[in-house]
Image (tube, rainbow, N blue to C red; front, side, top):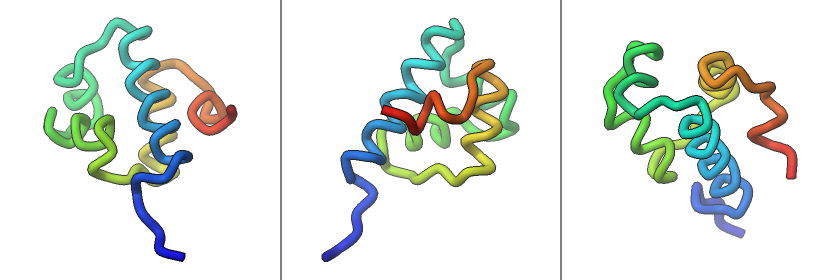
Length: 74
């Protein structure tokens, strides 16, 4: 069985990241600035082109004022 970043679980996390950002009233540039990254970094994570590790997920959760389980619980 081959692993892919386009699994259902990964897609769920990226959708929740996008949802949380929008609900926080932030655009990708604002999030990127807070992460000290580029806008394309945030875009690639939200589009599923780049995986997010647990440390990055924690930073996103802090920015969006969410608990980590928001992004991983169905």
